[in-house]
Length: 80
Length: 169
Image (cartoon, rainbow over all chains, first blue to last red; front, side, top):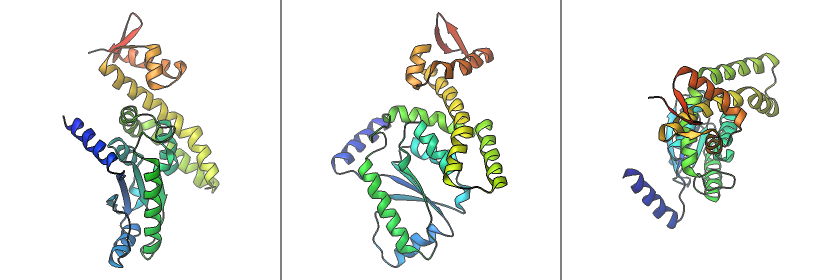
């Protein structure tokens, strides 16, 4: 049922123009801070990235990335 | 690690370009914006997961990745990753080619073997299948799956009835 709904929703999204769902793994000290300051300085960038903050890019494991794609992410952006 | 992921994703039927690793320091907001915008545009061109050139359909990808997550937890590939890291450190050679070659020869075979084993269990959970059916569903060669299959039978997890394999419950 849930899957049907998700599929329906996804079809609707595809019709309206494709907005990719991207998962971002950002390092707390680098990329996350860069994203923060980009926001503060009011730069425009696409809102497709859902961010997960990690304390270091080295914390990211192969499993995390595979799991992200398994859950239907269209891309994974790792920022160190 | 990134190279391992990339090669393993390609093995699972996902385009390698969907995963990127980029660097932007805390002071580089403009660079970050550039990277994100560029990346989102690439993915937009590629379309949804499972729809780009050379990718398997999403159902297959999902099943493969479920098995792949388990494979990435297994001891053998993780040891292989550690050993390769140690060797790279010893040789002091961190060039892309060396890493790619090392991953392709040492880690990927271990990951693939584990993934095929896990995926086989997933397939057999749904229905019983014969050897050819398994090969087709896994898009693997016969010789690749014969050994893990024999091991599973030996362990009593899978049983064979008239050439068809199913889970022993």
